[in-house]
Length: 122
Image (cartoon, rainbow, N blue to C red):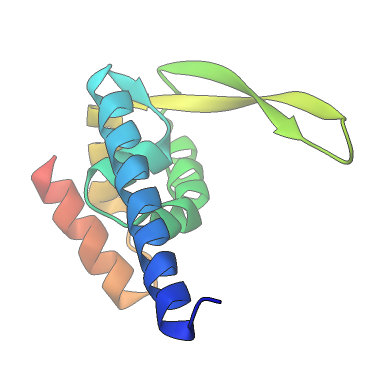
């Protein structure tokens, strides 16, 4: 029977492995030229939870600034039971994301500082 400390340690390792895997996949996706907004944010150093939380807002900001996606892709979204559907998603270049992050400032002060740092790094 596993103790609470062992379960906690296993959870830490699981979460760390998941975050490292996400960062590696995002870096690979960005290096191909075009990637989803969340991949750009994760590759820039944000944790996956924060990147996924703000990716929709960054996409909306990009479209409101008049940017169009460099490409689109499709992925299968699971619905109820065995049912799934294909949904499209936008792929952006590094320059497009840098231009959007230069003007995007969320109300969350920590997130705004992170995005300012990412815009300077790109």
